[in-house]
Length: 318
Image (tube, rainbow, N blue to C red; front, side, top):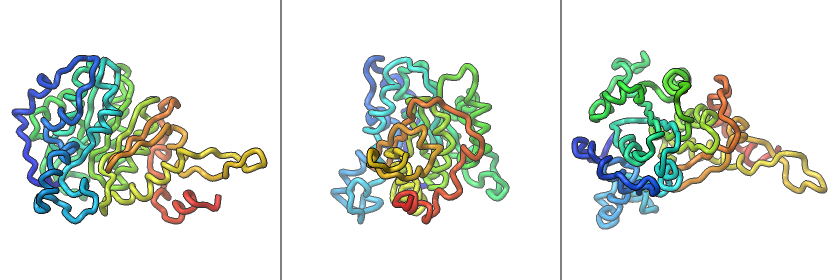
């Protein structure tokens, strides 16, 4: 929950949409828009030079990769490439951010997509649920989102939803009762920037990916070396990557491709590709129609993190 001294003047940034306005035929630069909101998605560009000059300005000064040393990320290139097409005109699309936190990221996305009048943006945040003991399913700490000037308006417009994004029932309620309306545009983009816990990240992938419309994307942020996120990076992602190249069938004189198994059938059948940069990956939907799987088909398989299962799926025997 640390912000490492990151201070955002929300009063000043509230008007950034006016200055970010561009021609509808040209996408803005995500870095330029996001730096005005203070989101950590592009803070790496600002924090890296002083970090290289003085290790005391780094939060991880001993990392070999220089880009891992400062606070903040370098996600602008991935967003320009994959979210940029939705920022160039009135393309119907529903967008969901998982993890509103203090609102800087959602603000950046809103301004970036401001020329797309057919875009409908939503966010899901846990800290605005009922305050109380965590063992009772409540939130014992501050409501981070309410400090942002857009908070109440987004709540009133039913676009900022309060709930635990790792809970299947919460996700199903948010989707079926808040987002999947007859008049809603197609779900095209889901971005996970929430707890950065491997099990939660997997929950987002398995629940939302089948519901994203053909050609849409799910972006997973903070796939980084950390105790919390490592199992997604080291266990889930390699299995998904392996599934991209699966062919199936049986070896024969005519078929020289080695037969093997699918790690995640519920994801593989919908997967066009995975495109990664430092600590962020884009999971791209193919042209298979969106679906509404049952609970078993919407949740992380029980053996997804099992080492023996992973080794067998990745390396055989098949």
